Image (tube, rainbow, N blue to C red):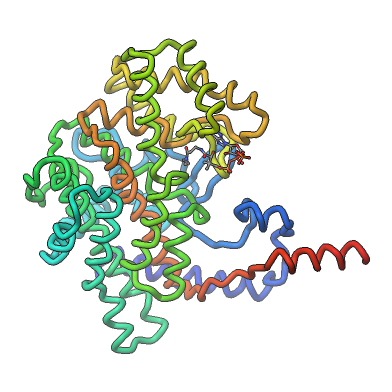
Length: 438
Ligand SMILES: CC(C)(COP(=O)(O)OP(=O)(O)OC[C@H]1O[C@@H](n2cnc3c(N)ncnc32)[C@H](O)[C@@H]1OP(=O)(O)O)[C@@H](O)C(=O)NCCC(=O)NCCS
């Protein structure tokens, strides 16, 4: 067993004991009440899930095992000569709960490089889809095709004890994460670069190799990929991609099946697809106004027009956050260092100045501040990754780190099948009638 796996097992054993004692002593304590409105309105704010990898504060934003994004940028190991954190380090932090050393991160990089070979049938399955297929659909299909490799599914069929589940889920997690950049880059080169594929370079870290296979060898783009793949990895457990992965995993579907469920959720416009919507919205605005750089007044008018047409301003608002997303701020800081003069980047900053008060004035939008998606597209465009349909795939490769680290925890802690109670409106009406009489 590798030492990261052993450390994980030891941490999980301690946690199992702690949870057992918590449940014995406090299992009956209430975490809060559930209102009828919450049941109808997307279960917002209902505490009902345990996710160990990260926790979201509505004002402060995400913390991974207690560390904010600015802290991660400072504390996590970097590539040689680089300034941005390596996502391998974030994965270690989410899995083990401790900041990794350079050696830990190098170990994970090497493990993923070693396991990155994708079997040919996966490429054949991708090739069987029409080229026009959305990259996220190609990605989901490829992940499902890769399920033939699941060690968990095989072991489960052969018969294993519940105590061994985590072991096979861990192995599948490491192999799946290792292979995702190759699959994603293959889809990118197939769809946008005439199928002119680039072989992996086993000497590079996970992000740099991904950049290389997509065809980007600029050092500053590799740094962007390290930052991007770090900040998109996790956002606690209730968001659609994390919750879907966890839910499907609770049926003991293997990591490939569970992650594919998360990815079909990430492909939705209210979740991961918003980053492509943002850049389209900016480009449509520029086209309509016939300028590369609209003024703040023009942007304000365009936002009002978008709202008047009953459309959302993409990249703004959040189900939980109530302040500027620190993932937006991290990208803004990156852009200030690497590409402050870029006209699309400047437009993103101008939207940030004018949009919040306009959105706030509608009186209904709970969070008028930008989320992670408001900035990412502008940075990618700057470096020439202009195919915005592909952006959600990048998000998906990153999201694997969080949701699969969580899935390892789910199985190590022996979490059961998830099965919340649902009601009919008829039931609610009867309930209300009884409550009113009482
Ligand atoms: C993220 C999002 C789905 C959260 O939804 P939510 O929790 O229901 O948000 P709210 O409670 O603030 O929504 C209240 C109202 O404001 C609207 N609203 C929220 N964000 C809005 C935005 N950016 N532009 C216009 N209207 C918005 C909602 O559509 C809703 O309108 P309705 O009552 O007519 O249905 C929503 O803010 C959104 O659609 N944003 C744009 C897409 C986006 O950036 N998604 C990426 C999320 S990381």
